[in-house]
Amino acid sequence: MYLNINRVEFVVTNLCTGQCKHCSVGHKIKETGHIQYERMKHILDKLCKRFSIQSVMCFGGEPLLYYNEVKEIMREASGCNIPKRQLITNGYFNKDPQVIRQAVIALKDAG
Ligand code: SF4
Image 1 (cartoon, protein in one colour):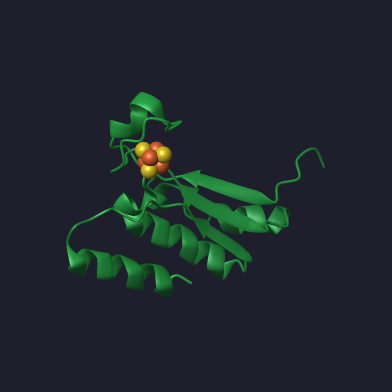
Image 2 (tube, rainbow, N blue to C red):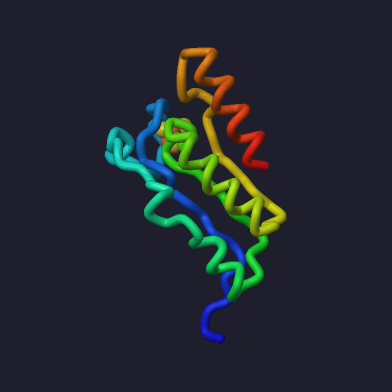
């Protein structure tokens, strides 16, 4: 087989709450576009049927600005029994404690 994929990384968005000078995202850091899970759902299911996927990661930008998309990706990864599921976040995606709590619960429920 030509390809042997064992890891999938999702750039959820380039948008970020940080303004780090060293950021590799560069001028795209203010772009609001993001992954739409509905348009790619079952992609991990399909990949897992062909490859032994060992890890999935969501990053950005700040991925938790769109935590519902992260939740769905992680739910699918969990359902596929992908053992390592990672998220890179700066931890700052909302000021509202209610929203933060919702995001935490959503991610926990997604495995
Ligand atoms: S993606 Fe990371 S490095 Fe880039 S601005 Fe955000 S927090 Fe900083």
